Image (cartoon, rainbow, N blue to C red; front, side, top):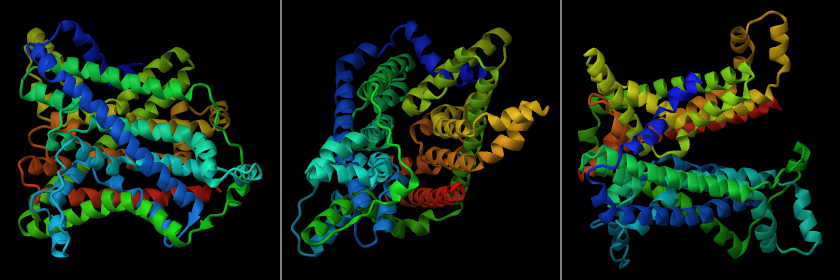
Length: 527
């Protein structure tokens, strides 16, 4: 209960301080900005959701059902846009398509007469975010399509169902839980985005929260904006659960049934068309942005490749490693403390402490700042102690924010795999007089080793990429690769942002490759 309540302080802080009344600038915000925040945020969600659905489901269907050259490599390449934070993709697109953009100049040199493509608008932002976030839909949908047994397709063929009708009437409905789950993650990432929206000049809730707190210096109004955004998140979450209802999508099959499925070979114009569909998200979501960053890095490496960059990278890795360690410890504490006490009523505290992943980083940051200031004021007024340096002069608060934000990333897979272990081993250990703690360290954690490593790496990647939380809560003496890239771009020095961004992308890709390799090795060991 204590762990859950402590982790959930940001949410309680926002709820409590709503009763303190509106801030001085609230009427000004409502009159001039609130409608834009709501309209733009909803439009971004809708547009990005549609494109991510199209990219994710089409590519997943093609790689699962058709054979073409380099199929296995392309299947993995479709995940790579997740390695590039959306705000970095946004900078790269402006460099390619803006005034004097590298891609525009290249096409003109080939004889193409192409006018400037304006990216600095909400439609450009939708495109950028869709190219970055579609793998959330692709990953789950691909796994779902791969799980379909051959018998489903054969039954449809016996009933005279065409390929098109089978896709829309059978495959998509069966894959809808994975599609909806992926789209929900896309929506949360869109609402959490700050760097891309700020750079493109689009007013969203997240940019509004930052502006209200920093430019207008009205923390109370920022809390009210955060509360409205929380309501929007809860509404989206409610729609997802309502859509699922009580439907069951279970497919009971054994391994041999899955292996019976064969891919069709593509030929002619159909092959060209399907390969074009796959090439679009890879090209626009990964290859072109990385090529632009490499071009900028080539122009600026003599200036940017220095000891400062390596020090920033070390700080980023140090903070991410520390955060990942505490997140894993917190997740294990919540899972096993709640399991050992046998009191179902305390599961509420476990659930509320894992909602951070569905809350934008700006909300968490504002909640932590407000609660931290209350603690500082309490010690100052009652004990004449100045403890502000503990909160604002160190990384303690930032690490705490990461724990709340990304706890669900490690908690969900660890809880699921710990349940798979069953109770037999642990109860046998208890009967032999071994304590719960010793049983955990000697038996259960070694069996969870693969899941622990995967969860640790996933949290590490998410922490490296996080921007809004880091911008709000990092101490002045701390710098990260994500923040450094953002600061250069915000100062209109996008070329200088390339090298920090490439270091970040390179590390994330290496971790993704290792994670993929580790998961395959773990699956082979289980078999």
